[in-house]
Length: 504
Image (cartoon, rainbow, N blue to C red):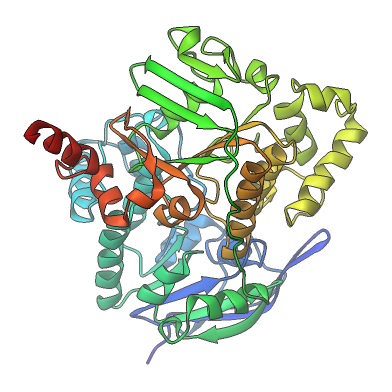
């Protein structure tokens, strides 16, 4: 059988880092091949070589039994290789259709609009071709990437964390599409930290650790724990939450209606974690923005931190009251891509009292603090003077979360805390969130990962079309009832309780 792709002894070094160390990797026609490894293992570098973004220092690329070189992304596409990036390669000021057409080298016209609509509907990834990208959620932006890649009719499709912002139902629809592409004889490379998805979907897996291939396996024949152990060298064991010691009211919202988000009532007390579930695009960004102060509330008293009205205060003023915030989008929101880790540390901390008291506004002290964050949260990097964009997605996420948690805030609002991080790192971040709450802080977690919410949250609520439901003890929910409530079905727990009240 003619092979599709063979990477042989691929080596790539950066200053201080051997990202790929004589890596062998192949993909056959008609298979879904998982590429696995913890953050910084070399997966992204290997795919940059394949997609023409990076030139290897050594090794051979064989495409359909012929040795070749891939000098640019255009050359990669010309071979028949498509890429769905973890970090969105989109222009925010352009429409969905303009972004798709630009990526395919076409003009955006009526024909392209119809193609986008047809493709998005076929794969259960609804898109409005005329919507401006900056108005979309992360989940909707991910749909653009997937649809754009599929419109290029690739023979090999690389998907880097494609389900990180998809609901289980959306992921199932995507998997059906990927299996169809496989059955048509295409090859697929699937990069994911969701090991149960890998076990259900992929035919083979290659596992990297420290830039080297350490194992290959058939995922369905291994447990998620066995695969994780091959990835990180040990089995991650999450800590159990300690017995709750509920403290005073730390964060409260009452009667808030900002247009994009409506919160009748929300309370988070010290010592507890409250989770917010919701399908992508249902107002998560708007909720985060109004709680962090990026969007001001109509009235100061609708949002309170430790009893102080903050609805008309910005993020810096809320930080002075002990609050901290982690947004969903890593590059461009949580971090300035072209700034160093040192400068990014300074930007989000300069207005905090503790930061100023410790003298961290001094560049050298800030550098030490940045190194402290990286060490505490196992951030793999080539130096804190390097640009934020030089980190892998998972390592940047660890840095951003660590930057906020290391200050031990009394109130933390975090949006998608473990998006794109490996199993071991996700366990570490969740354990840190639990420890923060156990130390007496109030934690609000906005997440689309239901397993994460069930692991972390003491109470749960649902965000649907911008409206936040009442909170309920996590034990009162199941994955099924939570999923139904997220879609706004009439059989949701809230609807069911209302029906009972009417019957009574």
